[in-house]
Image 1 (cartoon, one colour):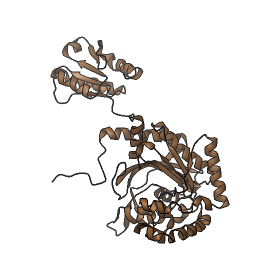
Image 2 (cartoon, rainbow, N blue to C red):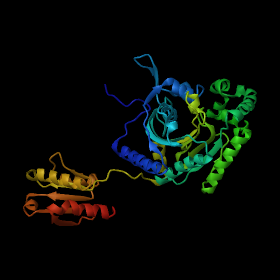
Image 3 (tube, rainbow, N blue to C red):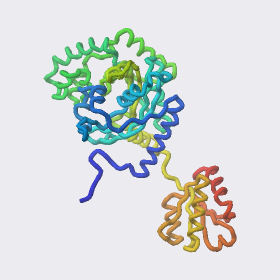
Length: 425
């Protein structure tokens, strides 16, 4: 029997893992500039946390969660998203007593049982930020701009920002009644899933991917036309902050997102390089989530993006993600008598911060150079009996073919200067 990775998952091999590492390190750098600090939550939580937080009527809860009963008889779910666990941690650890707002960022695997397709998997890796403790529209603008700046920093330049407002419980109730009146007259034209959504939560009608349902709902009333005064002022302020910052956007009244906890501001960043599934990431405000989970009021806003889809967008637009493996020096042992000396030179090179490698399979000099070339080494450092006797090390530039002899003791520092000061050709 030969084992394979489960359907909807895959092994992240070194070349791809190095690219992800670059994207994650870039995220940490820019998130910290904005004052966000790291947090990690368990990979599984009580099922009720997600059922109450995300919404019983959502496709995630109804169809996509990986839920099981543990040995203690508890219903446990692999986390399908990152916000609810962070809001749970915020309440559990008394973060409302910390300096406000509390700004956090996370990175980790999420799990959803959905049909695998390009950029969408059953186990996927997500980056995100959450800011809790303030309902200031300026914070909404900050989070949106942070998402855009992060995407630009890793190579996504051409993006569309879609924004909308989901309103609040006060204005949403009147909108839902108007939406129900509209949908009730057309229920026979909607798919069975939409018929169920209509009964449980009509807002989820906009989650449907069925083109026929999309045509029916094209003329539906829009939430943005039913905003109360407070939500309208909030949305206008968010738009004002974005405008002052020179951020372009499009208003999309159908942007309801797939989670029930969203209130007021919602947003999504899309790339034209990703085809039909063009969303890179998005998020919104969730001012009532903490209370829904049994905690004290803690207004919040955040975003999340899948690193797989981000990587696809970067490579489609820029052609390459920085961070691929780069070998600085390959140490060539001329014969077996100098293998220990070659090993020690490799160690000294690593001590200078250089990426160094050597042969471990007893290859010939030609074989070692062939390996060095295949690994993309910038330099080869030859260690042989004659060189050792003379206290020298022969260096070869693998790009230009130039060779030179340098004192063996000074070779690591000399190569470090070469590697760190000269650009890769």
